[in-house]
Image (cartoon, rainbow, N blue to C red; front, top):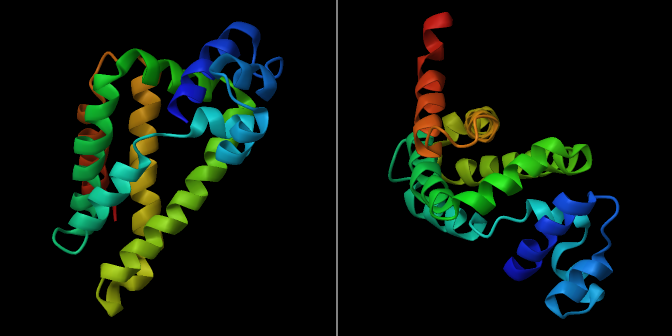
Length: 181
């Protein structure tokens, strides 16, 4: 999957998202188009797929229930996602900037965020005390919005500020919102 994504992004950037076919991408990596479709399902998912999602899920499973939920989510985003993006900065920045610049892919990213919010909320319901479970959807939505805002700022400024710093700042703002109540 990684090879497919890394072959596809330069093609998309050079020729345009609509002009590149899955067959061209498959040819670049020496596989069948049906294999690419089986792993990704769509061209948009080729760009959106994040090899770090499994590590994030595993880290969240290990932290939720041991830390306050927003702190656990923040720490996992900083340690798991930001660190890995820094290690692969050029590719990840190009990928994220392409997502923001390509309406079809950005629309698919918004839909994926909704699915991620539901999944995170379900995970939160599994660790929150019964009385706090109604807050799971809001907590998941706020956490993912804080991450989205950090990533948006990071890509817009060409990664001038480390992603970890932006995530920490957005979560800090999130915790201070009570003063507006």
